Image 1: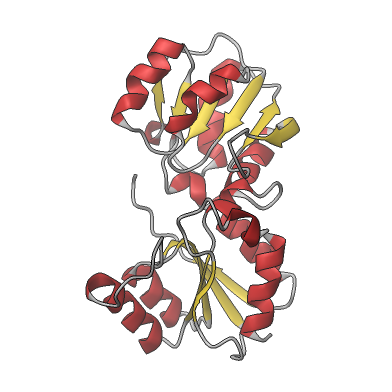
Image 2: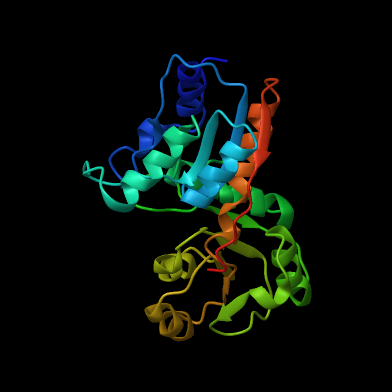
Length: 252
């Protein structure tokens, strides 16, 4: 498949244009010749030298990531950014990055994959000022099994998870904002969520969860953002393209 055709298809599928005004990431094709032929797509969460080199080792033509190389305004190609571009070129790899559109996609997104595992029903976009970045849904789950189920959803040991705020007395509605979502603790409480599932903590989140009285499950930034890339690779693989996922956990 031609790289430009695949990139355009992903842009449409993920509604990349809808996030242009709100996402600091430059979503879409970041590095590569749009006319190149693509046979093997490699997915990873981060465009780091380790994932780039591993993608080259397995014979990838395109590296598909959640966290790309270009954010905000244009940058000089020096230092670490140059080193990563240099590694892409050495490995003859194109780079496609998709950030917030992958957090918020209703079926292939990071939150959607976790919601599938939890069995969330009556789903709706997590309300933000602009575009969706997560999900809110109903759930039928024993509160005693909640942590185990979340750990299973992100394929991590229970000991990896952390919690903030009070222990939930019951759970009927769950909000999911993957990655760095603790800024939305107050919003989650206002819309009636019994629990917020997100990724990494911030200092202010400790007191926010406690003061508001909302249980928060911290399942790791990286761990909550592997599902969307895996789901995208499965979608791409249905088009008879070879796919490989590279797992490089950060522990964060």
